[in-house]
Image (cartoon, rainbow, N blue to C red; front, side, top):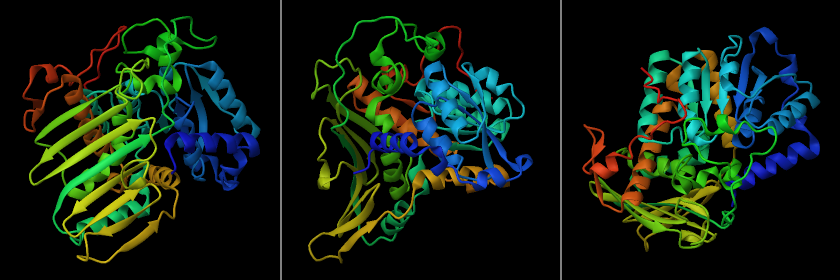
Length: 433
């Protein structure tokens, strides 16, 4: 099974062994510079770098600037681009990059707690944006980001690249055909053995070349700890929401899309650090969440340290109907009949590269300005990030929560206090309006 971490690792190894030239087409250099979309990338250690490389496969795009608070990462990426003849400016403060009026669009691949501020300020600066998922680290941030896109009318693509994969579209078309019969339960899950326990480490000094104050940004001021830095930031509430927001936004997005719904009546969740009670992580390594709708439920599960999930799949979505069950993951989909109520649909394999298609869609919409053509616009990213935040809030309160769609709040004051995150260190939550 292809996991996000394996994907990042494999692309990094490929780039290191054979160079970026195999990832960036020669047609890039023959396209008129005056007609190219000038790209700047912020946060380039992991998915932000993968996103940028996918965008640069389009001859109408060129990279002109990179930004990262870790100068070690920044210098490494600048050198990699230089090897294939691409010269860029380097920044450690994204605000300086946004001042460059010649930059048309930015990629935001930072930790989650920075997405909102950067995306809103990029829109204010007249830039189009490719922002990694989940778009915000709170429900309020999601609302602000939607408001900013609407106010400044910028192209904003969210990095939910499964929205560009054909086999996902085909699977949902089958769900909508009604052949599965009445669907009463949808399961989505992520079981990952590659998420290993984090040993507790003492606080210390940030590595040389790291602007730690800028890395923290609006998050609470804390001493530097290597457990909270780079990849492992996602296991701490200050910066992210664990596997629920890391993978849930991908998989639960398709659960909602298949059922044609977006807002649950109620949410309840239970879990904890069951696999690794002594881990330094804050987010649960084991979680079960139930979203209640009229006539069906959506269930989310994740378990760290285990690879064998439902239907012998590491991750996936299953639509359980009276006639059969459709099982979908990043590699393909199939239908398992309920007795003899319908025919078997054998495995339909994935035939394309979702990230490349997603990046191409972003570039095409920047050129056409036809916002309706975006595969994952900010509204899609906001809805599913909010949905996943609801699950985390239910877990953190330990209560069954009801959601008032009109008021945009829960029936519980403790839960409502978690809708927004307090901003620190002189930063203010942007309204987007």
